[in-house]
Image (cartoon, rainbow, N blue to C red):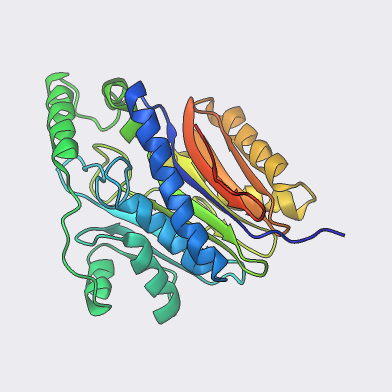
Length: 309
């Protein structure tokens, strides 16, 4: 007989933290986020736990979500977020700007509409209707990075998007794939949430995997999953749903996470993906094929969170 264990896990994005001195700050960030979620989880709600954990990461400018989101090719912020419950209720926003916490707008989409995904200006109008105030998430650091990268991209003599960008982005690998996410289990409900600013110098209007249900975010009665990495990879592999399916077929969360990432590696090589998950028995799993992925989790019986990168 398996005893159900409440649990929460968060990630701060898969990729490379180029500046070693940033690592302790990144680990502090995911630790604070998981503790914020844990407080809500102990009150009994996985849904509240995931929202609060992701909000803590969105409010931390070290991460590429909410405040500190990276800029598009034309210098704008377009953020994506999604949240999903094990009963298959889901809400998401894509290419939204002018709000502080996209994850909270995504929750409102789930709770207040018959839709799953709102995008662009429509998502912003809905946010204002729901009372979300005007907010500018652009930080001075992100603006400076955007100016430098865009200048070098133009000077390379090649403006076709991403043909030269892969070389330029090596200067700032920590902001390429810093999607954030959380998954929680309260003994009944499994909830997954993900939020991102996307990819630096992405095409205006580009939507990644985060708000695509089954790609970057997914939850059902078997598991909840939040993915991070190159969004196009997760979309093509429907990676979050794939990881949950491995639990359906009998794997535990740690094994399912590794199995899903192995598929990403097989098809697209290394340095493209990571994910976190919790299964229906409260087991946590996480895996990556990148150099780093900041993770923190808490389970019943633990006095302090596990943190790692």
